Image (tube, rainbow, N blue to C red; front, side):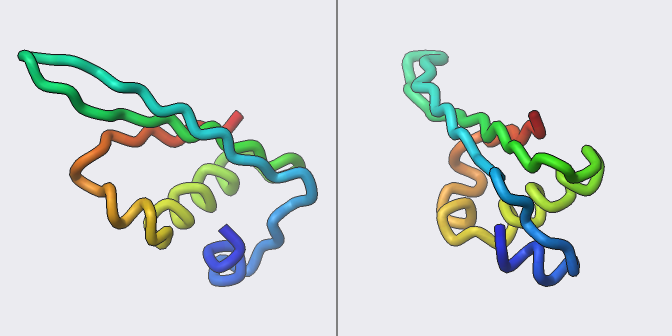
Length: 77
């Protein structure tokens, strides 16, 4: 998130937190994963926080590795 924040020229606020919830789902006899990222960026306006979270997700090596394999929903809380 720090790299994305620097590129956007904003500071990651103190108390920033990301809570990941991962589900194991079953459909049509096959298992698959889905995830929710609950992002807390206290003090940032919601739209800026959402853009930062999405930019960080796009740049994250782990996110890149699971892209198109795991459905991920990002929610600013």
